[in-house]
Length: 127
Image (tube, rainbow, N blue to C red; front, top):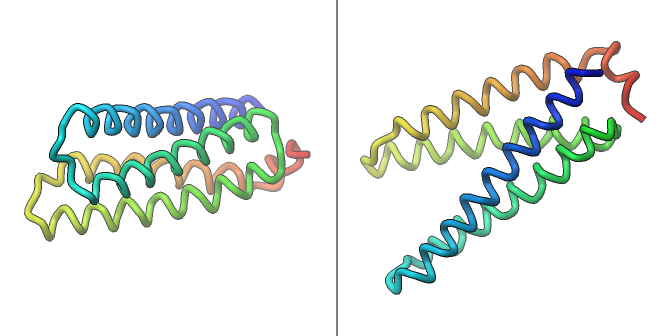
């Protein structure tokens, strides 16, 4: 049960980091008159990821069954999204070290989540 709560807290922190990043991007766009049109889509993606993962993290803290299932789906999608972003940065010729770290940490979170949240002994804690 402690692991579920810890995972919920980590997921909330993950979501809040995306929300903070989106807020900084919004402020940067306001202060910079030459923000690219693509910037709006990136901000929207960060807001969606941040909001969804924060809500799911709260659900995990409350040990809700929907949150367990939603997190497993979301973390899988996040690994795929970060792999796509890594590929796009590589093709563009940008520095990919930060994106490699994103993929590695998100993949680690996915492995831990899938390993722990799919066990029968863990499933019984969810209502």
